[in-house]
Image 1: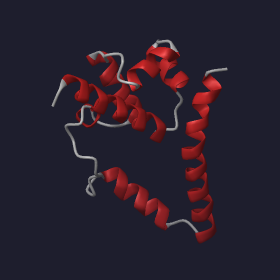
Image 2 (image 1 turned 60 degrees about the horizontal axis):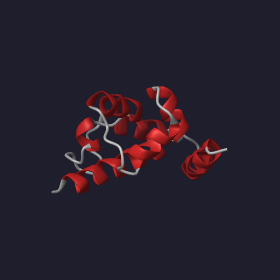
Image 3 (image 1 turned 180 degrees about the horizontal axis):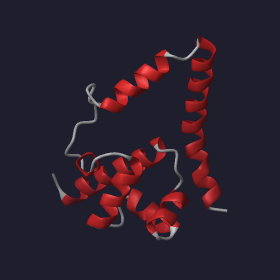
Amino acid sequence: MTADSKRSRIAARLKEARKLAGLSQGNIAKMLGLHRPSVSEIEAGNRRVSSDELSRLAEIYDVSVAWLLGEAPDVLDASDPRIELAARELSKLKPDDLERLLKLLAAMRSGSNSSEDSDLR
C-alpha cells in the first residue's frame, strides 16, 4: 500500500467517524484547537495527522486508533459490551418510542451532513 492510499484511507475513516459522531468540522476544529480548514484538509488527505491528533480524534469519536488507521476491521464486534447494553435498552422501549428514536437517529445522520455547510458561513 502506498503512502498516498494509506493517507486517503485514514482521511476517509476520520470523515466517516466524525459524521457518525454527529459533529461538524467546526466542532472538531474547536476541540483540537485548529482552524476548520485544517480539519477539511485532514479529511481530504491533504494534511498529515500527528499522533497526538490521531489519538485525540479516536477518543472524541469513540473508536480505536487502529480502526482510524485501517488496521482494524470495519465490522462491529458483537461481544462489545456497548452493543449489548444498547440492545437491552432498546428492547425496553415501547414500539412508538422505538420508532421516534429511529427517526431521531436518521435526522441526526442527515443533519450532520448539512452542519458542515453552516461552518462555511
